[in-house]
Length: 243
Length: 368
Image (cartoon, rainbow over all chains, first blue to last red; front, side, top):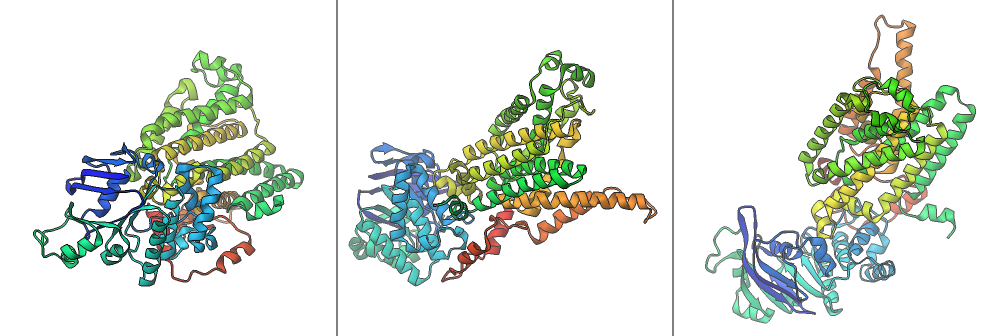
């Protein structure tokens, strides 16, 4: 479904990706793991068109989408839930959700999709006319995911959905991701919380200094790699400054 | 659902718009029937000003970008409409150097006003094409520089504008009814725009440009289209203003007048239609009041020297005070609500404290 081949990206002079390749098949939940600065978010930004990659290709549903505008990529069915719950604080919950629906705007579908989000996220129905900025952290994360779902994405990319949430809310968010997977949504999940991510993932990639260091099933990852080494160093080159 | 229910339960701001429109109409009827003649003039002027403030809010409030050139487009609309509607013989007298082709152009007032607005929108379309691609400080400075360019053109191009001298002989067309009607139409128009898909996408880009583009919003495009729309309102308002004032010069379309509009927006609150309207009402009342005080002080001999510029000083202090203590304005970013609805919203407290304190987000918005 999604094929990323030899992706290079940089922020000005600082190179963040040195040839990332990964694949996501339809119906899969793939986790992309790695430390701070390993290039996880950069990978998602490059795929979604927010960041223009230097080299490499991104293919989605058979078409090359490398370097296309974000709005064109969203229209193709690839949605990103950005890091830090990028909801629109001064817009109401209703307006945030309406924005999500623009890429596939059909009025009759809108109401139907809205009902679906209410079923998944009952709190959003209660808060429907409140500004997004007045929602709690967990509610904002739910809104961010619901907003992405409004565009009926074929592939949903989640960037650190558990970041900065209390443990109880983290449970809630992971349960939700499982629900989405069980309903057949294809998901590419970026997480720092590797253990939790591996519990629900079908496959995983480990990113280190802008390169894929490992790919396989969670079981393989646990047997072949010491998770601690991924996160706290120990392997070759682990002590280097990460970009 | 009855019409009343739909007004009360619709999108935030629908109630405000209907209430304000009713208020304006009632105000016009009362002023016209009972108030002294001077008041009719003040009310007409207020309605035109309200239209101009709403046009400014249309772009500024929804995009968060300070639009210095706005008053320039008011001027372009005023000059274009006046040149078209004024009788050729009067123009020949009033503007001796005018291009013969322009002198001979003559249209009835209503088409002239529309053409004036279209000219302003067309100029905006050309200027904004590169300008809307600039961001933040660079963009704002360039908008300011553009206002200076427009002003220099108005003061120097005496074949068109009569240069720095007064352009006179314009018909008095804008009555209290026309001005009120225009203000109500603008009120409804700006509200519909806010709720439209274009307005919504623009507001999203104001909150967070990068998140908006990740959502599929083409930020440059929505800013560009709204800038043109806002300039159209500016041009139309400028034309109506000119056909009320009947004689004017380029100084009416420069920083001084822009600051009056900006003060209205800042005092009321730039984020909403309620804010723009509140600001326009307060500043108009205050300005008229201060003018009375000033002339009283000068004529009664209470003090031994003459007072000038009292209005400007008070306005400036008010602007500074608001920016320090209440940067979101009196209304504070959201629309007016019925007290009942506000209670309902407050009755559903969030189980957790918000991720960011509200004050912080407000400060962050101001910083943008």
